[in-house]
Length: 138
Image (cartoon, rainbow, N blue to C red; front, top):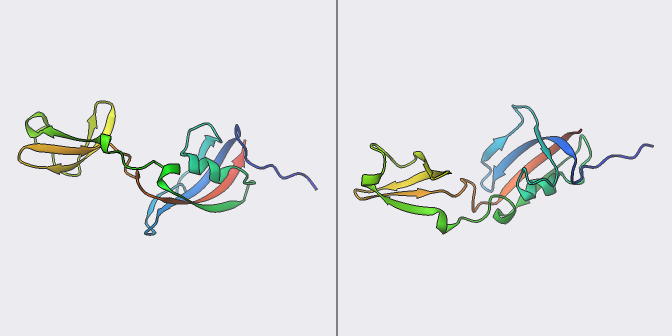
């Protein structure tokens, strides 16, 4: 019987995945797209996702839940900012996507005087669950 190859650091792999939040909402899935290509252990994906793929054989799958620290990290209050409304673009409203320097940010509040923005990743502070299937090891 041939040895089964398991995904390990340095392997180029393709995976299908579905990511869900603790409330069951799906936040992303590759199932309607091509499988996600990446190199295991290279830092191309969040650490918990690397860990989920490491040790899988082609055709096998697993479900892993990761706390925020292994996903997109905890919310960082240093990434919250308020700017004077007079310095913001005309017509800016809550929910708009903007850039703070080179960082994407979400407008979370607009008052008569200020605009509050959050540059945290939208999934920061949340535990994530991934159903991961190893499609190939190249």
